[in-house]
Image (tube, rainbow, N blue to C red; front, side, top):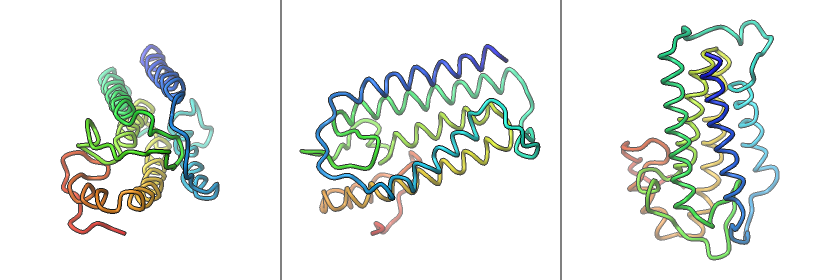
Length: 196
């Protein structure tokens, strides 16, 4: 079990290293969300990730085990985390120099429709949710399930802000894209009407 935790930590550390290194060379920012807007999704995200990843929380009810310990559970958790992180890397490669950690529009911003963006509009969030689901399964405690819910809510908040920016920048293309491609879950039908 300790070996599985080390593998999970290694996956996340490799991903963070890639994410930091690939941030160099991003295009110049033309427009950025306000600090208050950023905090509205960044703080819940930090709380959710802490609930999932913190090694031990000394709050009895949060540490309630939900899943039995087994090699199968840890193997499945590692597979989910690896697949989710790989999906984020694939998305990051397709996004290229348009990427930013906060909601921004870049100089010469492009609407990317290829690769994972043909499956979901926000594949980085989809991949991170899958990877964090793997981490939550590895944890197996109530706190991880709560943390995953908080992270999902933070990503929904952030994607709504991003979509507003994209609709303003691509008023013809983006609504059509929203009508054809789901936001987070691949192979689901997007809503009939495009929300404003």
